[in-house]
Image (cartoon, rainbow, N blue to C red; front, side, top):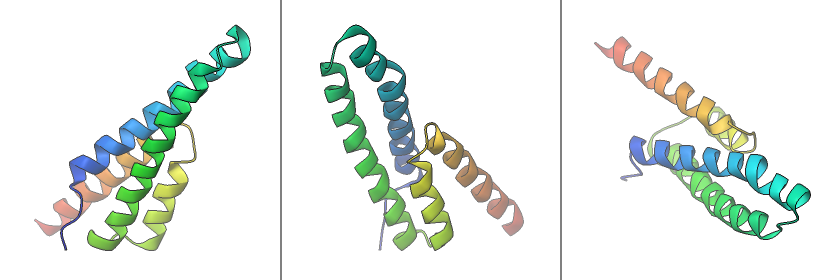
Length: 104
């Protein structure tokens, strides 16, 4: 079974993390301090779609890339934390580099 590529996972993870930060750092202040509620509607929609896409690629990695349940759970948890997906992508990169170094 062929799943999403590592690159696709990283792109979706970065988009999810960026959309979350934009929602928190730009849209929420615009809503509550400048009275622009449309900002959270737009950013919230984008972030919601990005989060669903991120959850899909994490669950796909569990099924097709033989990620452990722990790793997948950490990945999903990272999606709930601001900037968590950035840290998780770094974790995945380090694990893959260590696995590639061990197989040489």
